[in-house]
Length: 95
Image (cartoon, rainbow, N blue to C red; front, top):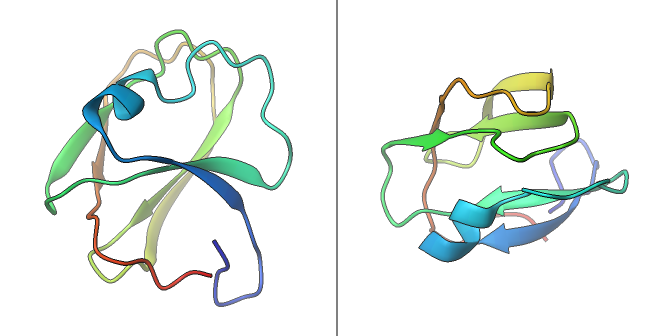
């Protein structure tokens, strides 16, 4: 993914229920400049949790136009409060 400001992130894609459920659980590290993009077929609130996540993560919310609308920095590991997100699976404008 390449953002308008030139920042690029190599993202794994979680676009099935099984991939979204597993997410980044049990990872001991996540190299800088990498992440995971969760794709859904509909724009709606989607719940996320940090169960079995052992590293802090930055979580970025995109709107239906793939613009960043909110960022949570350094969400602590094993944070069990649910998190809501809006996402969709249309073609992403990132290269």
